[in-house]
Length: 116
Image (cartoon, rainbow, N blue to C red; front, side):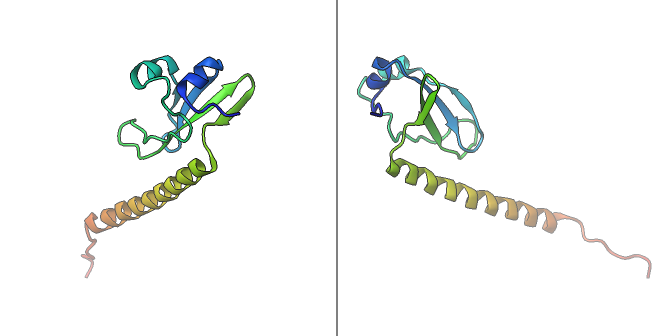
């Protein structure tokens, strides 16, 4: 059974980590703080917030660790939402890279041949 709320995770002695798909920011999650601020019934299953690390556009995933076993706190619907965001992120990065290269080519000084 996958724990669904903060209280389920705390009661089960589960350690939770977070990781960003894009900037790879990684860290421990303070479940006690979340329980105090959001309430013990706050849902962690399929909770996929956007990264708050600078201007990162990635999505945070949470992973439950029980001993040597680790599971993403996502259902198939959560995986689909995450994949949709990943596809969008890849397309956005491709467009931004192409625009930056085009802008650089346009702003480069044109070379005039003075040998004539």
